[in-house]
Length: 551
Ligand code: GLN
Image (cartoon, rainbow, N blue to C red; front, side, top):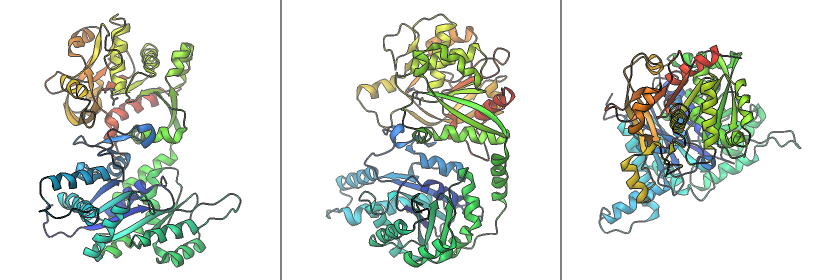
């Protein structure tokens, strides 16, 4: 619905006190409840890093690199927006400090500033505002929600806050700010403290911004006294302080927000007339109820190389995989219990492989490099030989092909040239274009990235799962199944059930159902396209079998 006269409203989401308390889920949930009022919504993420995109960041430190359909490598929050809002975002919805500076510097080099002195202020915030408005206009959004990384008071995001302040001066009625703050309850005091939030608001004030709404994150709901205190000392109305206690499932959050009438508050502040709740939250609510009431447990083992820094980091590095499992589990009325398994354990002690029998299914997700690889290959072999349902994602597919080549074709030492350049049987090899990039040491955004079409072979598990002859899924890899080995692998019984449209690149490998209950692995990352209301078909097919297979 292109409407040139449409006036977009902007909601900025900023953090206070500390990071990691759910700005991304808040942003996504605000979008969800506004959608349910009949508004068209888009979401943007601003990361204050110098990195131009997230592609070169280490997932174990920064969390997963989420790939958009246009191939842009972004922050995991973009995945949350897509999953909650069921919309497709593109590179225009993401920016970093590095990207903004890069654009301004390039423009200066092209004489686009007409000889004037280009300054950090106002030229950097002006570029930020230009990008925000452009992204909103592109999809003709009623509301654009923009999450600013970091917290108030940090040096790094000052120029983005300056953009908020400037936008608000330009169009005061169109811009509001939501602060997501944290209220600790120190165990020695036993009482929830509002002081850090008061300080955070004062820091935001010193950047020239007064938040209209405060989302109060805490381990428990906010009581009246605390609401009053925040209202009084942070200059907001009491009803604009939203209680956001910890929840069992992130998908509870939009429903909780509506308990505090947040969409009504937002509409009133932005001067928008939304429709009555249009029922789309009801479907969501039904799914959320299913998440809570599911009693049948399916036990899924996720095998990778992991740094022993606790589950928090792990779940951030594989968030799309975890969410895709949860979506599919919800659809088959089960509760997925995930166990992280370090593949190096099996290298030290192969006897341990027998412990895999306790799982209803095993997943090997994407990865890079050589650590833990032999362990993963022996896990795949064990799953194949012992008929444990197996789902491989990207590296998990390449390693399945290597395992098959070694143990069925008898090509000892078959490998990927990523790990062993001199393997006699390079069954997984680098693509020529990628080789050039590697020689030039050009690593940023040089993989096969983003959405590509795959053609699906009839009468296969993949075809049954997708119910279609082709599918668009997202990629992020440098290496491919080597076309030279495809015929041999096929003859030995491996089924390539999806390929690139020209048939050259292998997209899915599987074993026929009569040989194995579920053995399927994809070169693409199906986890990047899954949501609560439409789980990814491959995860769904896998979870159905895991459910049947329950121990
Ligand atoms: N390391 C492999 C490649 O680059 C797989 C990548 C991945 O799993 N995302 O091709």
